[in-house]
Image 1: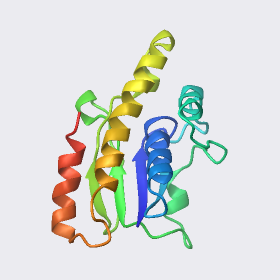
Image 2: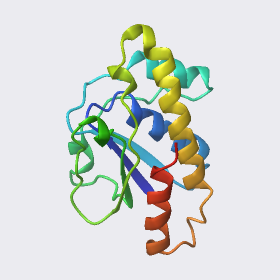
Image 3: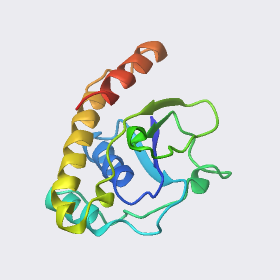
Image 4: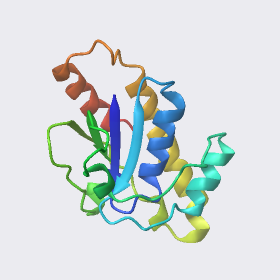
Length: 158
């Protein structure tokens, strides 16, 4: 299953979830991340926290979603947005027919720099809970309607 995690800047939340899904997915899923308006670099606090948690960050980079809309790009089965629509952020919309889910998380990069550590840990913990809940599903055998309902439920996890 190919998963595209979308956010606006592709520097924090989407990078965190991409890494979590790939690290814990043990080959069952392949996650990518991108932004509708990428910053061009991964937030240093994202890299520091992922490294602290034992994740490989050597391939982490901020990417445009155009990279995944071009010819030859992997076809996505699922697109997850992680922008916090409750905070008034505009979430990118992916064209086409993959399943879609919204797992909104407040942008830790928007916190004041003295608060980054706490904000990034909150985002990481929330996304990790959601990644584990998703990966605990019988993805190889689940029907689309059940998966759609599970994705909604997972997106509501604190």
